[in-house]
Image (tube, rainbow over all chains, first blue to last red; front, side, top):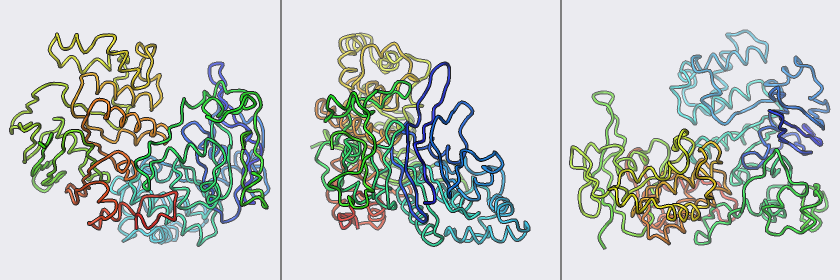
Length: 324
Length: 264
């Protein structure tokens, strides 16, 4: 395994209150694999990414667990070592491509600086490679674009530049946090295709954070469904989307407008996302669950393999739910 | 049936000389009472500008807009026959609610455009409470400020604000694109129910094909300021004519790969 997260818990504290952002999160990403992390706002998907990269704010504490990257626990690395991990070994793509780029630096220079640093080559050579990397993310006339500023590019072009930046080291793991949410559907399609191609060509693993199950279906081999800072279901994309077990996963799929049957009312999840300062003692989804048993409100379920699953032999399809 | 809203040859240009930009060119369509008309296009296609021209937030450079047969724009000013008749719900409930006003004042604000006796009648406490209960808010929410609410709740406040005047026609400008999917499902279901209960007519602006399919009866596809295709939602989804519409449909991520033929 390239990346293994074991039993990770993260808390944020402010004004005598504790926000439990992650609770005993475990999952792993293999070499060359594209794994989707799905959840709504507040589910902890971005906090997971920031923890891996060591970018958590000062008010965050890691209560428990470890993150093994190539067998080493990144949580115990020194600041310097963590810094060499970031960018060089683990690349990151943020949601908003405008804020991820330096507004007053030309595209070519931004890329060349990163390449110059990570590949330890002369700046002139780095610039030449920067132009090549622009061509690689399918930007037409890369020499011309290299001389432009971010504001001169469209959202889709900017996101291509950000991908080129993140892939420049080149990293073994790419973390993409909602890389297409700010983009139009047609552009989203192209960007996803590009990321998939690059990953296949170089054997890069991708951790794709998204709230869109459609995006997961399109590019991910495996999916991790998060709710209120916990992993509630995980498995191969095909299996989880075709036979979801956790009521939350089912509800999430039911909430999507379906092109095939537009006349059915959307399945809305009753209630609100739980308050992370005051989580229920039993299953975190129980207050909103339509199939909750008395047991669900008392005992906290843990991830266990789904017995009747098609993937039962490998045990990859796992769910944290009493009502299976 | 007479069209509720009829647009013909509507254009909007910004700037002049070499900076001239055609945001909307020669747009024409009609919306009939009781239907939901979808307007789809990517960012910069002019769909929001069109929505703004219908509400009077922008004026058209040329063309005519008829509302119930009478012109909305006479070349100099907007003629609103009756204030509160046409309302709008914006995309981002974060910025469309005044952060320094209480929820009650936000919801009641559109009534200030109405004559005093009508204002008193429509702004009665019973009516306000019934309305907020209908959109899924509670009376104890009324004295609070917008920042105390989640995105979905804020959009409910914006919907209540639009409905307080008993409008006939509501423009929904990407009402759910800033929301999580499960919250989006709530809001879309609510909008559909409200339409049925109150006999509303919607102009639904969105970039999401699946949402348009779920909400609308007829639709228009916009690209670079032009309407490239108009028709019933069913026809356009089954037999898209324009290459651009086909691209939009095929780019839509779907959970069901086996249904891929549906948007090939």
